[in-house]
Amino acid sequence: MKKILMLHGINHNMFGKRDPVQYGTVTLADIDASLQALGRELGVAVDSYQTNHEGDMCLRIHQAFADGVDAVLINAGAWTHYSYGIRDALAILTCPVVELHMSNIHAREPFRHVSVFADIVKGQICGFGADSYLLALRAAVAAL
View 1 (spheres, rainbow, N blue to C red):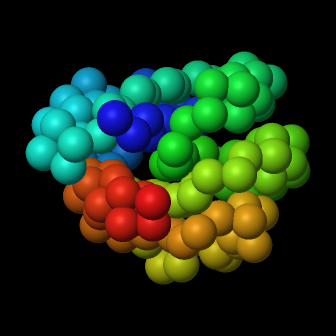
View 2 (cartoon, rainbow, N blue to C red):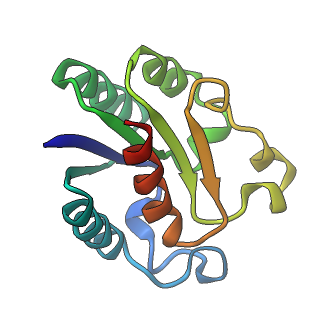
């Protein structure tokens, strides 16, 4: 069975409480449950990881490389716009990486329009709320 790693970034543990205009009221547990259900339907195993610590995120990406995961989904939150450390960790991976965001980052503050991951990921999905996660999983499976 193919293994997909979902990486949730900084502040995502606050989904459901944080800025419901941008992120709705869905929780991280709700998102992970939806990914698990779709993963079963698509015949893949989805493992989710969330951290608020940049170094821990890099270590989890390194572990994904060592484990030979088949694809990575990442919503790095604010790290997307400035973390060259996470970008360089992602660049180590040899599997497809799909970047995703719940909000449309291109319709928000100008600093959010930039993704330092853009040139190393397979593609980006943004603006579809919690459905962005499901679209990203489908895209990753299609890329395998």
